Structure formats: C-alpha cells, structure tokens
Image 1 (cartoon, helix red, strand yellow):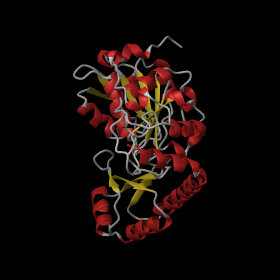
Image 2 (spheres, helix red, strand yellow):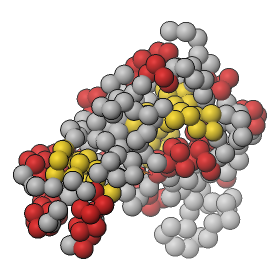
Image 3 (cartoon, protein in one colour):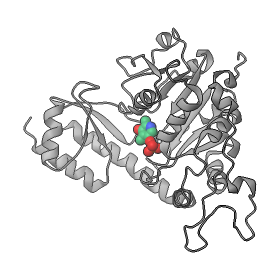
Image 4 (tube, helix red, strand yellow):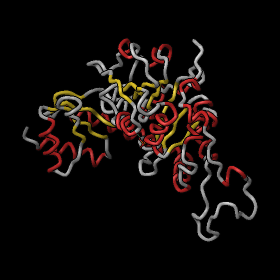
Length: 339
Ligand SMILES: *Cc1c(COP(=O)(O)O)cnc(C)c1O
C-alpha cells in the first residue's frame, strides 16, 4: 500500500494544540486525599470521571479484540462525527463526501462545521459508486454499513481503503447484527480507516450516549486531545461497563431481535399496502408501501410510530424491530389500514 501519513490531513491548529491538562492527568494515582480538582468532598457522584475511561476501554478492548490504544470513546457517535470534522476538516475550505440515502448527521455536522459536502449517491441497489467517489479529492468520505435507512451492507469499502486518498470513515452502528462483516480487523493495515460503533443499538443503551471509534493510534490520539476532558460521565462509563459485564443479556436480546426481524418480514409481506421489503442486516426494515405519507399518518393515528423516509426513498418507511408485543401491535394496525 502507498505511504499514507494522516498527520498531513490534520488541521494545523489541532496539530499544534496543547491539550487541556486535567487534575487527573497531572496526578493519576488512586490513593490519597484529593484536594486538586475543586471537587466537593461530600456525595457519591462528587468526583470527576476518568478522562481516559481506562476501565471501560479495557472492557471494550477485551470484547472487540483490539488494543485499548486503538479505541476512542465519545459522548455518542454524534460527538465522534463532530470530532472527526474538528480534527480534519478546515472550516470554509475542506470538503467531505457523503453517500445518500444515509444517516443525516454526517451532513448536519458538515454544515455545523462549515465544511463543503460532495454528494455521491448510492446506486439503485444502494451500493457505493466507487468510480464516482474516486474522481474527487476530499478530506474524508463517510460510509455506513449496514446502511441507515436502507439496512444493507456496503460491498466495496475495501476498494475505497486502497484507493481513496483521504480518510474513510465506516459507521458500523448496526454491526452487532452482522458482526462477521466488521472492518475492525482492517484497522491495523489501513492508516486511513476510522471505524465507528455505538452502545445505542444492539447494546440497548441509546439513553447512555457512548459511541466508539477505532483507528490507528495516531488518529485516536488526535481525537483524544481534541475532546472535552470529561466527555463521558461517570454514570455513563459505569452503565456501558455493566452492559459488557452482562454480555449474556446482550446475546439474548440480539438473538430475539434477529428472530423478530424474520417474523416481521414474513408477516409484512402478506399485507396489501406493502410493495417491497428490502433485505436487512440491521435491526430495522426498509419497507416500500403504496403511499408512505398515508401509511405513516394512519399508523400514527393507531399510535404506532414509524420513520417516514419518503423524502429520501420514494414511498418507503423504516420500521424498527421492536419487542414481540410491539411488532404485533404494528402488524395489527397495518392490517387495518385501508390503503
Ligand atoms: C443510530 C445510529 C448511530 C448512533 O448514534 P449515537 O450517537 O451513538 O446514538 C450512529 N450512526 C448511525 C448510522 C445510526 O443509525
């Protein structure tokens, strides 16, 4: 592979940045009388959390089989996306590539950071248009696999890793529903790869806000020095750690969701207004109906809320796989629709 030096893509101010040094950076022992951080001596959540999230990173390292130095933890994937922009994309000057239909935050975060967007749509079968992407120079390209809202995996990411000259960010928010296809093992070989994952989906911790990024150490260090010092609260670190310690629960729920996805798919096929169900490797189904706006609104009237994606993909709604009871409620409501 050609030589790739990620520091050449970093904004100059970030490269030169001397990060904030917290009290816990300057003394990291755990025994003693701590009078260094202006904390309140009373209470149970009175102390600042570990800014480096060592315990949680060690646990993530164990389950993902990747060294802790290759792990970054963010306050949700949204913070990770924002930090990628802040580290690499110069306001008013740099460009990024996004491949719709996909997750909306790549674009919103680009606007917030005043970074220009190059749009290279997915093909009609929702795969990457590699030739078109490679025509452009951009600081990074965001791809999502399995993709939201289409549910499919993207097949040709390896070609981007080999030939794209910027950073390839692969958002694997749904990877726990098809773990064998993760690009995590590629981190070692590809200095231009950042893989994002999250505790919000298969780990059932959307309320907790912990997102992960995996990359070579140079990249992780750049994200780390740019983040707010205490970006993951003590409560949130503990919640994510407990989930990892109860990995059997995680496996049980994952299996149930995958079973329910198959049930939902089979039952939806029998419903008159359903035209097509796209294959899914995630915990949701993209469903084409005869009239998405009408189906969406009528389901709302039955107190069943789906995601209307009509503006992105004509007449499609995205349905999350719920509990068996929730899925039944959806199916009953859909059978009653006169559309
Ligand atoms: C749900 C989702 C996330 C998760 O975001 P968090 O901020 O970690 O909750 C990330 N990317 C995609 C594509 C998603 O659908």
